[in-house]
Length: 444
Image 1 (cartoon, rainbow, N blue to C red):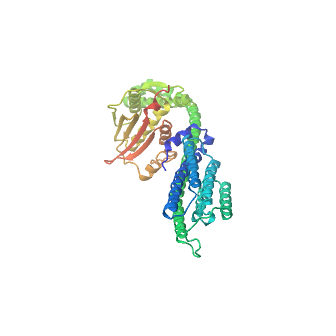
Image 2 (image 1 turned 90 degrees about the vertical axis):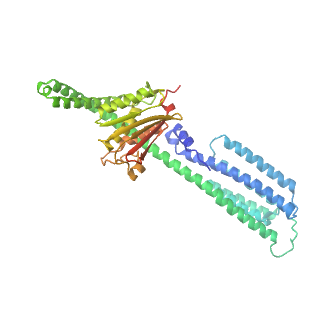
Image 3 (image 1 turned 135 degrees about the vertical axis):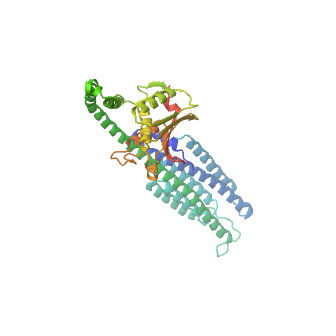
């Protein structure tokens, strides 16, 4: 079985948070319906092959019209099941149970025309029970046990006997022993193949469910952080305004103006205070906004050029290299979250190697924007590569660290992209940001 995680993720994002946990279960039921369809095709082929062998090779007469009619009915039902699967509608436990009941009914009818309980293939009922125990809830599983048991008992009383050539022998005939062996091999093979596949479907469902729960927890964490940030930004507004006024007064005072070094330090402090005020203003303006409600129209070149120039001006970076050759200049929209995501990655590269070169390489391929941020630091440890993007996981050892990359990873995921860390072979680290260009453009 192949899975389509992207489709699952898109579906999960379109349903309310309370229904997220139902998506993997529905996907597993749909995959299991496909497994039943595939197993039913094998049953049709196996029954046809067995009928032909018994009739023409073993020379045991069978009611061919009735038995082939049953095969035709099973074939039509399986085609209908396949069309039902193609509708991509939710599959219920009761629907899977009904499909298995049809299989049991056809098998019972075939056994009725071929010796009843004396037919060694009667043990194929065990396969139906095993499949039901994997797919269905307990009440449906016990209902399947009851149904197959009643069919077994009925076939001991009502059936058409087979005219076997050695029916008078007291010991089991060679044909009967051979049938038992074939039945055992069929049961064992189908159990290994299909129960294994169904188990894989269930494991994939559990993995998707765990991932969706993790994402829901992270999104709830982001909401709490947003509320705290908005409150902190509101409280910081007045102190920052006071600092700005004081620094402006100092810059005009004669003792400070006469000292070039003090004057330069005051100017640097004014730049940093201005940066803090800009961050606070951005938090307050973006609180409660969603992407696209108040878009800022720009182009890809303009966005990157402005972002790199502002970052270079407000950070103590020693060397910065920016390369955007062959990058298409398409119209896009920009918001605070997108800029902050890139700033966080650049800040992380600068903190890894304050005296080294920070390199930014922008490119585009297959309508995907790729930003490579490289540094000359020690690189990522194995633990950091494994926990990259998780909150409070930082290589700097600071309490509360790691939130910047955590937010960046979630912003990229919201835009349909991803952020991937890696170590470069020549030394240093590289963080790869991949975003679909369509997510940066205005929705029509």
